[in-house]
Image 1: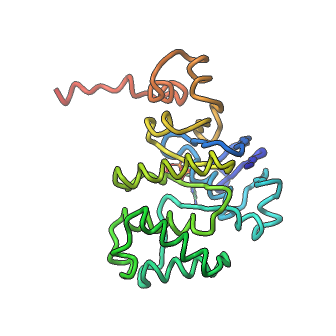
Image 2: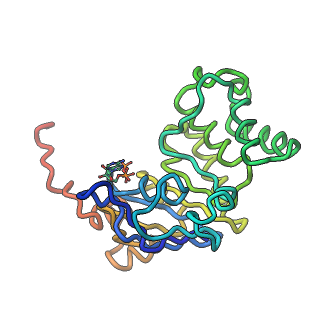
Image 3: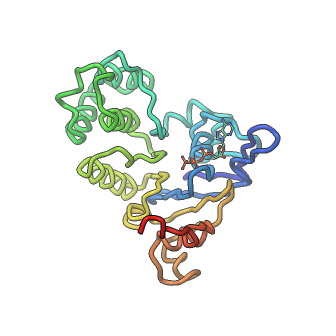
Length: 250
Ligand SMILES: Nc1ncnc2c1ncn2[C@@H]1O[C@H](COP(=O)(O)OP(=O)(O)OP(=O)(O)O)[C@@H](O)[C@H]1O
């Protein structure tokens, strides 16, 4: 289980990127983290994976505070950042081996899981090529494989579907469902409402650093009416989009 307790991140005096966020992400669930640009999703995720220290508050993963037990907690996290940074000069397979060394994945396991994931994401042809020859989507797939190869219990994925082709997106969505149904935790941010609607057991909507809704999409509909998630999202985040005048384009 992932718990965020009064989590706050300030940048300087004026910017409160994440403001007193409290969330519980339970085992066996796919949890979608939604919010407009600049709402605080990546800042929250960076604190959840120990990349950024909270100004105040805590991140507890499987009962352990990530600030106090960073190595133990990180062993159980599979993290994909929104902009994967991968050493470009080495080959895909060298990169995966390096990640396996860091996470102490036994040789047999890395061969078995690695070749399965490489096949799933159709990277067999490119895996021995330098990463600098990969397209954006191929790098995204390599980052996903690297995040999942040590079989972490908790997946924390920042916009994982952006940049994937429809087949890879389909595979990832199914992997996420399978991982959750095996009693693990999947937390991911997305701007794609259809995906959130299709696969999330629960969602949270963050706006200007604060959580404005947490629950199931069904609960959101009970609160605000039987509308599309896109419509509900725009209402909850008080989007001004309805007032935008598109007549210029006529
Ligand atoms: N290092 C930083 N220094 C100063 N301000 C920052 C920093 N990182 C993020 N911010 C600010 O914090 C707020 C939240 O940013 P964040 O990247 O978390 O948003 P986001 O919800 O992930 O947005 P997007 O959907 O566009 O990726 C924004 O106002 C952003 O400008």
